[in-house]
Length: 310
Image 1 (cartoon, rainbow, N blue to C red):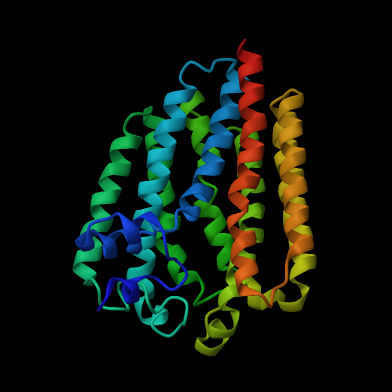
Image 2: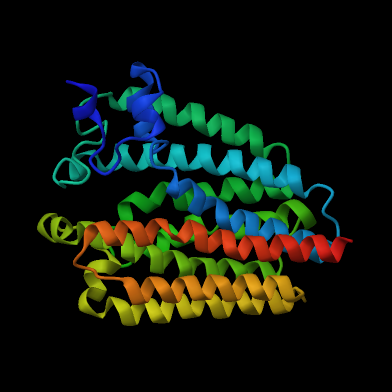
């Protein structure tokens, strides 16, 4: 098999395809290092909570290191999560046009090899987690329960995006756990807002596979909402902005944080306005744009933290 044919269908021309050693490419594709958008989306709530907690503490001395450790942790744990997802979904992936070229259904690596790479990444994630206090370590480990069950949810519920939200928003708790060794109401409201955001953007993502999912019996909010997706996004994105706003008010943030939230909200409104659920390529572009939305909010929270610590 040529390397071109070994590429995952919706990922070409990235650093894995051009720079990584041939032997490593299936492992890197398994863990989506050729498509890092998921890692960025996992990272955003981590960075939000780290900046918000630092602002509340009026102390940013440890914030740069926390940001770096969260970055490393998000990328390796998302990689481990994708490996687990592909192990559990390998038979389903073989039936879907977009995913049949993934390393496991394509036969590029074995399940045993995938498990070994999963464990290696999880150990790196554990090493990162152990840099924090005991409460943060236990909070991080608790997330693994949700990560473990998530791949099975699309077989049993129309709302698998909720479980993805529970997993991908966990970082909203981690910044508070690291900074204060506790999770308070502000953190929980931020977590809830992030979950609503994830449900929205992953619904957009799931529209790429809606037809194939219907054929093989896989459930999703994209199939559930169908032609009413725009209305559903207005509800979930609106809920996300409202809940995050409540968290910011609880944290008594200053104007840069509110400006960041306004930019975040404007970006989400732009996505809804642009969305055409019948255009898979557009759905993918809008899904990926959520990294930028998250960074806009983070920039506001970071500036707020710096101002309050000055």
